[in-house]
Length: 375
Figure 1 (cartoon, helix red, strand yellow):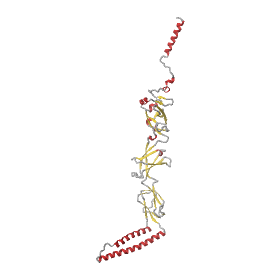
Figure 2 (figure 1 turned 60 degrees about the vertical axis):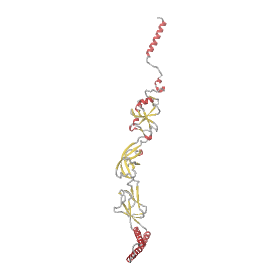
Figure 3 (figure 1 turned 180 degrees about the horizontal axis):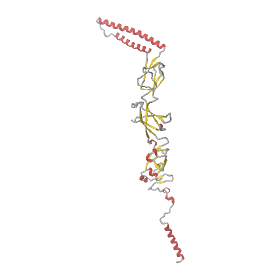
Figure 4 (figure 1 turned 45 degrees about the vertical axis):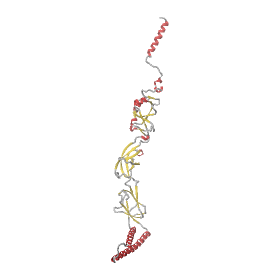
């Protein structure tokens, strides 16, 4: 074998061995292995992008049954809670019983009222004996004397006309139709009424009665006291104006109330809450609408309150929350084929600790767990 022919055979053998050593391997740019880098998104699986979001083709969304719904703060579900409450009279719904004129107060037969005592509508609360000045009393006595004198004259005229009618009847005349007798009789009736009223004004008592049922809140005067016209004698709560008072231990509950109602559906009016003196909780007050007759003070009833989400939180649908590796997350659809993940505190209660949603955002409510597998 010639040296030239040997070198040719050696070269061909080396080429053949090199081809055998690389058989089945494909050499290409490593960057081409990433569909996201190449811009050629696969239709067979979601593709993770550089910013951590996912590209999911429309066909793949249909295959995975991905569904997203628009979210709005106005449509957040309200939490419903029930509380037990005492029915009480509204403290600010009170009426003052006043003296209609200047006079001295006297206790009724039942005795003088005490704060906290219940009274019925129309019940006698106190007597008021008008107090007249010496001049007023003298003027009324003079008017009473004048009326007595005029009444005596009228009595004489009535007797004279009646006697005249009797004489005419005995003489064969007609005793009926004497207009003078009728006139004097009408005058005497009116004058007697005026005399009685004027006499009562000198020494009479005026009854002060309860305009409605309720509880005595406070008493401004004592028996024997002289009060001026328009002065308050006592204050009564209005038993028709009721309030529910509930004690609870949930901080900030009153500020979250969106609506309140009785179990029969009657709407209530939240008034506010105050801390208990011992710091063990809060006292919530809710007004009952006027005319709700089934309730009376002293009852214990249950009512419902609809609560908004706590401040700084948003409601997350249960189907949208995914627990993953001890954490919780939700997926938002930011475009036709792009999805972003958001971390939240936990799926407990389905509420995010920070406001991560805005009106109009689309949140994945079906298939969120499948998306999390491709992170």
